[in-house]
Length: 127
Image (cartoon, rainbow, N blue to C red):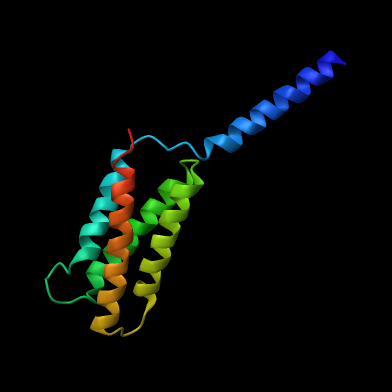
């Protein structure tokens, strides 16, 4: 009886630790932070200063977002993965849009810049 109780308590302890771990922040990761900062800079302003729908800019944003998404899938932190998946969905939507207007591109890029800015502020505080 005591052995069964000990096994049951061990299982509950291990399961509990796994559930709690998802709420503990991940350590600071300079590779991830660098890619996120690069994405933010590109989203914030056109590289040529004029064309919000520049295919090179949008392609680089989408590429960086895909790297962050793939990278986060292997970090075992669902919260971070969900943030990067949402960013990647936005960049992919902009990338796939055929003949978007400058206004559309500017609004979409500003949204991506705002989300990436919030992520930078949050992730920059990690130790």
